[in-house]
Length: 419
Ligand code: ADP
Ligand code: MG
Image 1 (spheres, rainbow, N blue to C red):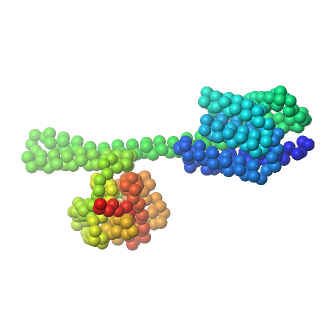
Image 2 (cartoon, helix red, strand yellow):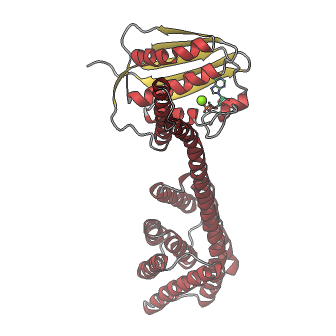
Image 3 (cartoon, rainbow, N blue to C red):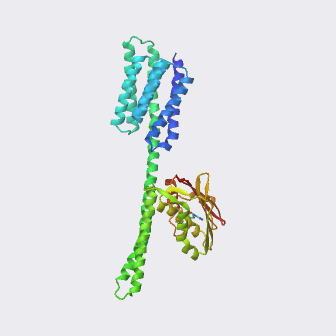
């Protein structure tokens, strides 16, 4: 007799452990999205319920006295309203209509258990393992007492020995499952804290390098303003210092814009952009640099039609500028920078190719990550800004490169056709 219930009980426990482990493995992907986390919980619950009901032998006593209380207690106590109510609905209705547990006791005891579990979830904190074990065992005991006394009052009490065995196993199992679930939650909290601490660290680093970068132009500006205070400065020199001082302030301003673009890459006022005109505009700014660096620039617009995309002019120019600046900086001995624009399957493509030092395959993987730089005075933030802006414009960006041969950067954006 006892052996006939032991096997289904152990199987039930295995399903619960499988659910916990599945949750632990998949959950980190959804840890910050509570709606998706709840959906994940429901999906695992549905999947395992189907498998259990489809493959396992239905034993009403084991289902009512073991699986229902453990599942509802854990779901309501640890996960709150949506998962708690879903678990309650799934187990109570499957119990009554599929496994054929006793209707009234299942409904009554199940509902009281859900209510008390949710009350504890919202009033108490998930704290120590001891306290959670106490809550779980109390909830399970209240359920069992209610279920069995209703059963007795209805005059349906049958086998005292069997009931005693299942109740004992359930109380032991409740401690065991609580132990596993507590550590699943513990792991989840640990992962959440780890992700948050990494974010804070990144913010700290960004703030540090922002102040460092701004301090340079501010110091030079201060120097020029000080020089302007000298009495015997010629009018000409005065004018030059004034220009330098303004340049310093503009530079500081542009650094701040860069950071803001990264931290808030959404498009505030998107308009239609003419890609060919924007590319030509940025190239004309770069011309003086390329002459000094002995670099020839070639631009080929391969499409006959106008190439319009959705975006913000300043941000788009910034993307082009950052990528082309890198291309120029990769050719210290001179070389050629070629820019193609073309239309391919309704996608506007901008291809920027240089004949510079190139990148190794490991370097390519790190491109766009904050602080990845191989330059002495690099910030490692240029491509990070580009990647986040291209994403905000619903575009895609790819890099291909070979050491000592050069680099190709492709940006793709959806074409907006006229009319
Ligand atoms: P920074 O230019 O300040 O170093 P970026 O984010 O613009 O920061 O670039 C990151 C790194 O990617 C560069 O330091 C360089 O090593 C590499 N890189 C980017 N573009 C190119 C390129 N066209 N050719 C070779 N290396 C490049
Ligand atoms: Mg750069």
